[in-house]
Length: 202
Image (tube, rainbow, N blue to C red):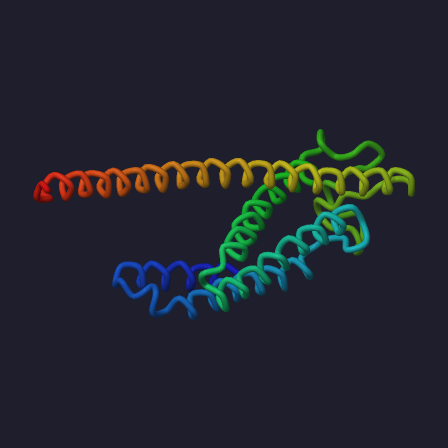
């Protein structure tokens, strides 16, 4: 994934410095899509425990990466689509927030859900370092429910933030258009007054 990311960043920077980003926008979009597809592939086989709590967190992360991949493809096919761009931006922010949340919930013992334990060392061939296991089915169900709530809370917070930013930008754009319209109207009125002043008297 890091190789794909380095290729995308390097090529995008080179295209930007040579003022040819518009010419290679399609290829840049393909590189972005390859980054997310590689990330999705690695995440699918990365989890230490695909059936436990860690697997559930990684499954939710795969949903976010899949949305990023689809949005990147849509932005490549429709480069002027605002919807594709905003979905891609939100999903990338969501990825970062979810990575941070996973780091706290799965790798810091103080944040591990109640009834679950963090295996600090490998005890058998099936248990890997850092994997979180729950002692009972009830604890596992409660921990998964907490993960789902965190998923919804983080998404809601990002959506609220994106909505506020869009409203502020739309308000600023509306004010600029209104001032431009008033400026044009004043020019029209001034030109009309001047023309009326130069008309010969009857």
